[in-house]
Image 1 (tube, helix red, strand yellow):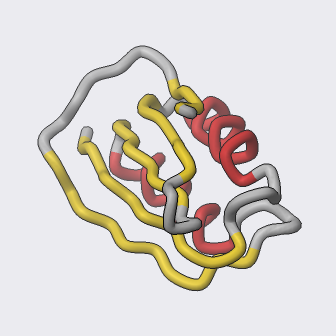
Image 2 (cartoon, rainbow, N blue to C red; image 1 turned 45 degrees about the horizontal axis):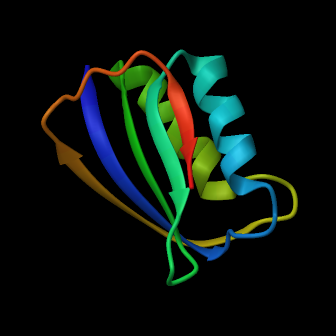
Length: 89
């Protein structure tokens, strides 16, 4: 298990990115949250098994259909156990 802090930039707001990210995280059994940032990026904190996080990151690199992902910054952090994956406002 590990915990990641992820910043996704590109056309990632106003394209259902958060909702699709939550759906993908739930599908993979990951926990954490996703939220829009004032600079137009999306910030994600996510915890789970390494192989599932790898699948999640692969999905993030493309994002949902209407999104355009320009870059992803990933920082590994101390594990934070949460029970669900949420959208924060």
